[in-house]
Image (cartoon, rainbow, N blue to C red; front, side, top):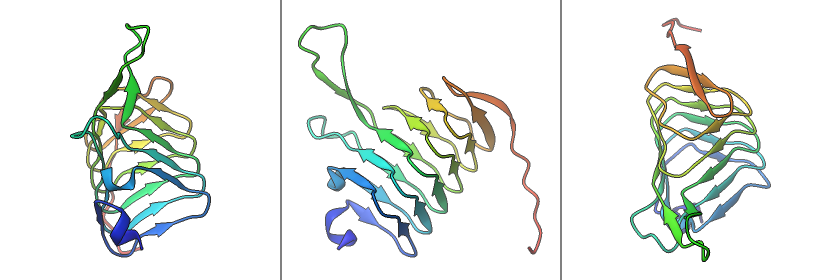
Length: 145
């Protein structure tokens, strides 16, 4: 069923219960992606080129929320705005994190639990907080464990 409703849907993915996808045709999911319970991904309906793209080997903790659509607060009628959210390969997003429209999370990055991501996160960095800020570079240990 997922291959039918999503724009793209890879292999070996796990989507936990109580997960919500708004406009799944605007969402692409790579391979080996874990979307934990209670996550919410809100695609953009009116802004056609805005989408949510999850690369390969991604882990979303519980209750992560991703918005690719919003409203322009400068106008009383709050017109729609949107920006693609791209989460590159090998990223871990901690539980209860919110990712706002237009954000790119670089390959290998880690976003700490409870963060609000308002700006791009560079590759192989660790970011935490509200708003999320980079606190250090992620060092990768290659081992056989």
